[in-house]
Amino acid sequence: MSQDKKRYNTTRRQILAGMGAVGLASAGAGLGTTAYFSDTESFSGNTLEAGTLDLKLDYKASYDGPNGTELIGQAPSEQQLIDQYGEAMDGPLTWEERADLGFACDTEGLIDGEAMPVFDLDDVKPGDYGEVTMSFHICDNPAHVFFRGNVGADAENGLTEPEAEVDSTLDAGELSELIDVRMWYDEDCSNTYDENTGLADVLVVQDISGSMEYAGNGGVIDDGSGGTTTKIAVAKDAIEAFGDTAFASPADVEMGLFTFGNEDYIGDDTPAGDDVGIALAPTNDESTFDTAVGSVDAAAEGVGGTALGLAVQAGNDFLQNNGRSGAQPVLVVLTDGEQFDSNIDELAAANAAKSEGTRIVMIDINDAGDGEPQLLRDMAGSTTTTTAGDGDGTDYYQSADASFATAAVDIFDSILQTIVVAEEVLFEGTLGEFGDAFADGIALDPAPLLGGATTNEICFHPGTHCVAFEWSIDPEVGNEIQSDSVSFDFDFAAVQCRHNAEPTNPFISA
Image (cartoon, rainbow, N blue to C red; front, side):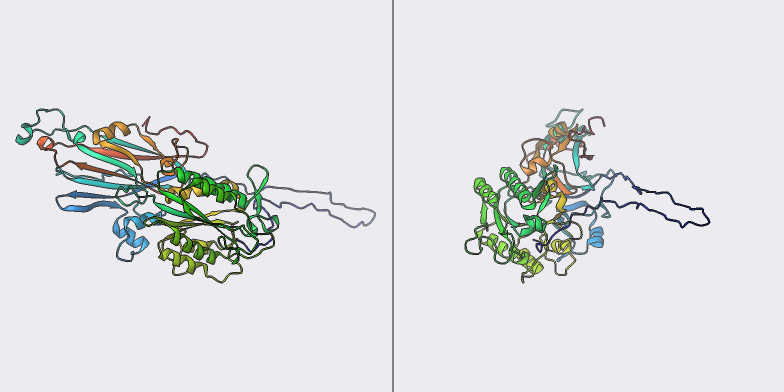
């Protein structure tokens, strides 16, 4: 949605180095001096710096025991969060708000290399319950993530007189086989398993202005394979793949499509005789969605102007009027520039949509320095941005024009990992069975979150990802567990993705 301007494609990697010089000297006293022709070329200042891959953790644990449900530990601490991120409207940041922030990797209080207990309880009883949500933060580069769960041997710790009446074993306790556990991908980091998470109505709001299609307006880009394509063609392919994955996921997702150009091209409201506009309400019919995506076309060449604010306003109205009760409304706005020839304020339109519960994802297709990236950051997310420039970039994605052909699918994969996700159980059984299943470590897999059928083909992107673990003891369990004890550990490891499609499990040899 640029101003349909001509672009000059000069890469940052072009280097102008050295100039040929010709020197002339005057003749005198029968003796002439002449400087030789010379030419110097150089590529100077070359550097290579190793990238980084860092894994950090945080957690929040609760226990329902003699004092009722209470928080028994978290990192970062509540005070550290207040000091770094301020206070939420009604007090310290909630766990969900912490997750929405994404946590910069330099956040004070993240666990980085230290071993520490989450649960350290010495008086558990039948009927007790505990839960911990653990966030792992991938810093800097995509990574494969491995998890290991070790369960120590049960200890009988002697037989009390009531226990001896029902338990004659002296060498082993029964606690690990009488504690029920469940572990799952906690998509919203809510500390609770929610079978309904992933109920979402997603409306893709697609820019069809001339700068998405025509060479004279910058719409033609490198296809990543030595040829050329257009931004709108790449967007269509990525949106269709996004829909394929979302429809196949365990989440309950419906997908819709809404196009925009200038103020005459909003949804399917276009000038008479021009039928390029699309306004498809979220649907669970994949073929209907694919047909709509396939029919996307740019506004006619020479039709100028882009109405971003009106597109967000009208797109949100359309989504609110056609969405399902209880579903999370999500606008995914894909554009390649700034507003032009439109009077609806973009940030005001975004804030109005957020106030109605809509989550806004902004995809910015622009070279660095072009467009209005901070405005799009302000528009993105779920929280209103009252002061321009305060947006932290939550739900904001950016790609340079030249990189869009290869970056588009990754961008939409990232959106799926953070929004269109159903909470999927990793394990359910006894604590002893959990130890058997995870003792050698497993690769945590984004694919189930994305609806994929194969294992570990997609890396975890940099950012925050949550898994949760809960344990409980059935109230019907009797005296046989008196004084018994068991220990267990959680371990995480990250391994780089690039050039490493089949990483070795680091826990196999650990």
